[in-house]
Image (cartoon, rainbow, N blue to C red):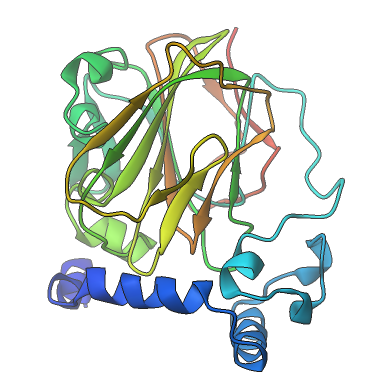
Length: 281
């Protein structure tokens, strides 16, 4: 079966309703029902609870608290690198931005302007730059960390669809990461501007940042923007910057400048937060 046929049912699913329902369940304190759901999830996806700061499943009152569980101290040491990997997951794609086009999968690309919510001036700063797309599977640690130190300048919540973001869907849905709901975070760094995008998906109840809290819901259907010109939101390399309440994908953009990705990187390779991602001369 082709990827396009495989994802066809997603066009007809009530994705918003399913996501809202999943969000309500994930927030509920269901006692033994919640703990049974967590145990089933851990067994189904092979979650390594030994890495969690709290390995006891019964200590989590809600599924969300389990899903966004912190790791024990020392579980993810930071490499000595200009940019470290911000998440646990797998590499979807990475490489150069061709003028303003980001490669998604064979036969599919999308524009930086579409990704950041239509702001052509913001997107132009990344023409012929670099990108990386990282996929978080259900078993992964779902907090997102800073690949380098940075100062937040803007945050944009872009409404959109809620397709799955698994590899099959990435190959079968054109412009997937620029059509799904997303939160665009813009930073100034010692290496120039940097964008980190949290991409939503089916069943992703919400996305949150450490400076704002939960960004969605609400889902008003309107683009929303916050500027931080008069606020000082500065985050160190490796500091937590956000989390997914049920998993998804992050996309990163760098401007046109020399950038060398980890030579061991390749599409589909498993990655861990804190490992070497890229270096800048």
